[in-house]
Each structure stands twice: as C-alpha cells, then as structure tokens.
Image 1 (tube, rainbow, N blue to C red):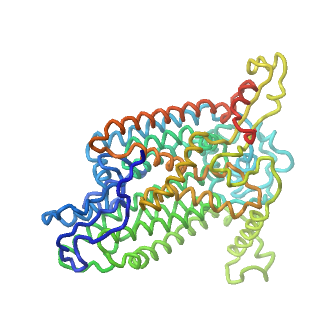
Image 2: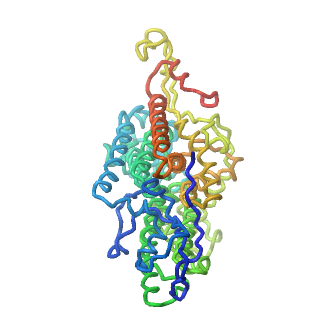
Image 3: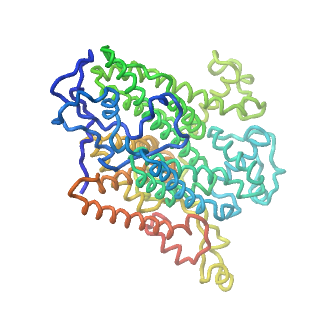
Length: 606
C-alpha cells in the first residue's frame, strides 16, 4: 500500500505573525520541502561536498516533516530550531546524525559505482570500430586536438582511421551542427587514454562520466529521499540500465549532456538545502529581535546555484537541448525558494520569491550559462579556418551589424545549425516517435557487423559455438527500469497534484526537460537513444515509487513494511538479472544468433 503522509506544502498559521509575535493556540504544519541534513550554523555559507548527498524513508517519512496541528505549542523551543523543523523533515535532519550513517552514505554509493565502473570499462575498446555516430564525434574530437576546429577527412576515412592512420586529416573545415564541449571531452580522453590509435581512448571520457553519474545519482537519491538505501538503489539501477551502459561505452554527445544536467540537478539540491538553512538562521534572528519578516531576509551568494549554471552551460555547449534543462531547473529552484519563504511565515511569498530570488536566479543562471557556452567556442574563435569563421569578413554588409565580426560570424553559423536541426527529415530505419521513448518501444541498433552475422559452418562454430552468430550494440534501456519508470511517472504526477510532494516534482523535472520538448520536433529524424539524457530521472522516479511502497516506519505496521522491503528487494534483484541477460547485446559480445533473437522481446527492437 502506498504511504500517504502529509506531503502538503501548504503552510497555515506560522506560529508567529509577521511582527514576530507568537500566534497563541496555533502550531504550524511543517511542510516537507527540504530533504537533507541542514548545515551547522557556522557553515551556513560554506561549501558542501562536491558530489551530492542524500534522502527517502527513515524514521518518519522523508516527506513527513509535518507537525500535527493539534500539537501544543512549545514556547520554550528556540525559534531557529522551530524554523528548521518547518524547512527540513525529521528524516533529513537525522540522515547524517551518526558517524556510521555518514560512512555508509559514502561506502554504499561507492560500492555500486565500482560495480557499474567494472561493467563499463571491461572490454571498453571492443569493437575496434567507429560505432554509429562515433564516425563523426571521435574524428572531430581528434581534429580539434590537432587543428583546434573540426576539419574534414576526405572520402571514406574510417578504415584508415581505425588502423591508426590520421594522415588524411585536412585543413579545410567540416560543417558540424553541434557545439564543441562534448567533442572536447572525447578529445581529452584520447589525449589521456593512449592516443588516437586506441579505441579504449576514444571511449575513455564517456566511460568516466557514465561511472561518475552512478555515484552522483546515488548521492542525489540519498539527499532527495533521506535514505541511504534508496539512494544506493538508484545508483544500482543506473549501473544496470542499458541506455546508461551503452552510452558509457560509445562516444556520442548525449552521455555528456546527461552528465552535466545530472550534476546541475545535484548542485541545485545542495543549493536548496544551504539556502533553507540560511533562511532559517536569518529569519530566526529577525523574529527573535522583534522585527518583521516582510519579504524575508536575503540569502547571499548562492554558490551551488552558480555551479549549476556553469554545469548547464556545459550541457548546452554539448547539445542545445540542454537549454530546456536550464529553463525547467531554474523555475524549479525558484519554486523551492518560494515554498521556503512561505514555510517560515512570509505572507507575500510569491512576490518575495520572485523579487528576492527569482529575478536574481534567472539573470545569473542565464548569463553564466551563456558565458560558459560562449567560452566553449574558444577554439573556433582562435582559429582562422573553422567553419564560417570568416563569414563576417566575406559578407561585410550582412548579418547582425552591431555585433563584432567574430560574433557576427558565430551568429550566422548558429542560424545555419538551427535550420539544419529543424529541417532534418531524412528517413532512417531506426528513427522513433518520442511517444514510445518512455517505454523504449523502438531500440536503436548501433552495431551489427556482417562479418560476424555472415559466418557459416566451422567459422561460426569457432566464433560462437553455433551455426549462426550475432554481435550487437543495441541502445535499449533495461526493460524493467523503463516500464516500471513509466508507471512510476504516472504515480508521481498524482502525488505531486494530490499531496504536493516536492520530491515528485523533482524526479519528474528531468523527464519533462529531456523528453517533452521533442514532441515539438516529431516531424524531423529523431531517435530513442536521445532518452539517455533523462534516464537518471526515470531511475529516480522508479525509486520514488518503491519508496512510497515501503513507506515510513510506523508503529504497528512493521510486518507489512518488512514485506514491502522483501518485494522491493526481489524486484531490484530481477532488475539486475535482466541487466545481466541483456548485457551481451549492449556490449558487442559474439553470441549465437538464437541467443541474440531471444533478447529481442519486441519486433520493434530488431
């Protein structure tokens, strides 16, 4: 049975009026709008850990921070403590209360990260072929290392490139339609991983980012749900998801988009907690001095929010679809601020949230993200031969005349890129309607070489022990995670509307930002593998549902809760087993054709 604690974010009488006078006979319902251990007072402005921390069911439900309205007011309770209890749930306050809890909060996420790293790095260099769009991004990355921009390679360069011959790299620019950050990331891996002759080096950066994403989501889940167990479960699910595994082993741009957006989400959770602690400290000081809260105190420089803006700038510098995450995450962060101000007793909390938080947040996040994005084009600016670099000089009377020549050229280049993206309608065998992405209806086949599938007789027996063989890299999510995540998303929508559970909105945010915008581009050629950008939020939504099924520790319900834990544990075991079952077709194992076909549960996966 799903737990239905008071998720309501509504704040009735605050226990004090705006002038700081106690409102006798009333006790505020504490909204559960903050999930994590607040910082000590002396650390209110200090940085927290770099990789995100914690959250779901411990003691009382993570969302169950509400104080019963029938509770008698405690006039002896310090104002600061009372405000912290309104802003932070009991489970969140207790999350890091002991040394053992803090230790497990790192050891368990690190354990699932190590597991996920092993299955990502094992045989990372196989196949020693440019897989799918690696034909663009790996060669472009090497070109950026050598030329500073994407140069052309001539006709049919892949066989020679795979053999380690890069002599056909030219000086003439190549027309490319994505920003440079993801390619610089691949280039960094090539530089550090052994050079362009190593297919391991081609994929080193995506493997590192894919592995770190497991640690991030485990710590994010711990903070979000106030539960080390549920955070670790989120890490485990990401470790065994097919989209996450494939895109940790094939150098495309989308895994970097996912990585930077997930980092930004984690930074905003840290900002949320730090801002709430500052709000509690400063509001308590005002109330204790007999002052009026008005719109509430200022919260100072929001360093974690600025870090999120940097990360989102890198996401946009990888793929433009990062802009949707910037817009939605920015709005969500301001909504959290509004709710916090309402919780401490600010009467005009909407106005206060917009004026004191929203305007500054919007301007700072957009400007910082834009500056980071622009800086990512430094190589292009420094070159003379990058695509379109001399357009302004060659077309002096055209374009945006008030811009400097370099920016005028870049703007024209961006106009051409945008035109390409919105008019790309070339049919492709694996293009997919976005409606089916959430259930992985149409897989994307990245690699299925005929030199393996065409083997016969003794050659086939030698390669795979059967009469016919297959070797595949199929971009397909773990079916149980995605099908369960789709159902969980419906539950999360209901919980958000019915109980105003902020966590439901948080887990849905990445799905909305990463998936919904693609419905505007259904006319163009798009693919299911784009869903890797929001796979962390599918995982978090599924774990959120499992947390609801387990429910809080309630006296008299120990047996039903234990049974729920058993069922959730059994489901998690099945998810891992399904991941192991599909692993060969995610990672280019040579297997009998019948074994490959056994894994194609739907005809649309073939």
